[in-house]
Amino acid sequence: MSLWTFDYWEAMLSGTNGVETIIFDLDGTLRHNRPTFLQGFQEAVRRLALSPNPAQWRTAVRWLHYYWAQSPDLSRDRLRFADQQEEFWTNHARRHLLAYGYSPSQAALFAPQIQRYMAEEYQAENYVPPEVPESLALLRSRGYRIVLLSNRSAPCDEELQEIDLLKYFDFTLVAGEVNAWKPDPRIFHEALQRAASRPERTLYVGDNYFADVVGSRRAGIRPVLLDPEGIFVEADCMVIHSIGDLPDLLAQ
Image (tube, rainbow, N blue to C red; front, side, top):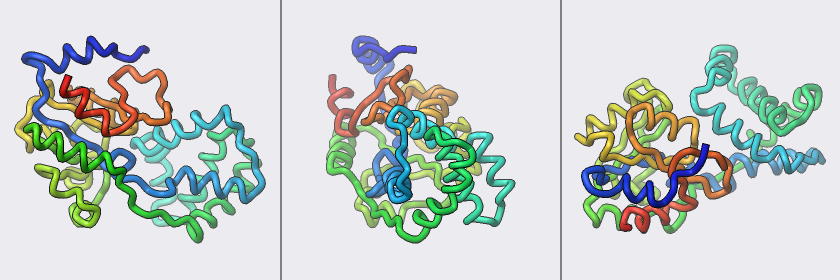
């Protein structure tokens, strides 16, 4: 697979294929944890004097994206650990260590200690990069319909108000409202219906290839992948490295 060329992208955004609606993912796209979950996990690994293989870094991050995109592994783990949150997250740490290339015995040995660190010491704050509100305001001023679509179970308007982002959206939609989680196309169809927007005139911007790109494509929406660290180097869609890149691309 190869990246779309700029000429192809420009053509897709011109004439009758012009964009009217832009739908944004929330977590990892507009709002971030600081430090990130991955940074917290890596700190726990360092404290255990483990030395992750740098060559496995991209594989481990991709696994994290895959797992949380409603993967079969996630579904099985939710059934298996139902009401056992600590056991669920210990197993998650074990799976993550395996993705880093550690042996099954190492993963089983160190996962409980990593989970303990993440539960007791890892603390993150909401962080919104300055280019996010700037870009959202600019896109609204140009007449785009701006929508938020998140895989969260519970409404997030109160949090969006606290981080001063709610005012930029025509409406927000979370997966729990329709009982469909990305990459299920039903949640994208619901967003299109509420926005009264045709899929060919809509963009979806998100950071998870497996949830955001695959899901939006299933609904006929053109995806834009936010990938500042080059996690999905073979992505077969438009890739941006910052939300701040989007207004300039649309203005070409």
